Image (cartoon, rainbow, N blue to C red; front, side, top):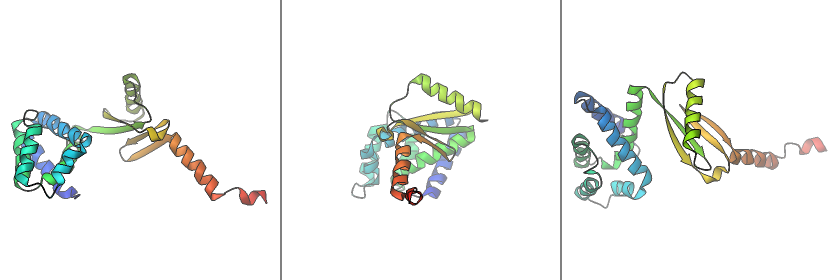
Length: 187
């Protein structure tokens, strides 16, 4: 149920309210917690998107998961979403909030995916390299592990993708063999 327009409007409303009450950083921390929960727990997202579970039950489930971990303002916002029947869109609203917050604070997202977990030293080295090679001051690094890459890395930054993985190299070689690009030169 992707609805980026709706998500953007709710996210903007929450940002405006949080700014008005001088709680923007605290609300952002709450929202990032909810984002981590949504990414790490597909069952939670399944409950939110289930048409079988009644909204009041969803509200109780959300409250039991988040009640002690988020501020009153965030809890009230989520309660409003449940009352309006928009809890289905919570993961999308959370993502829109983070995007808008990053735009306000001039924070740039960099995502790097590797075949094995990276050390903190390597993460810091990559951050330093990104900052020195671009004019970006505030960079937030997100890491992911995908064993299918075999080796190397995939770096995503501001709509750009650098795929330096062994998996991509193997796919390129396979494509060359499948296309038989050099067969006509032999004859």
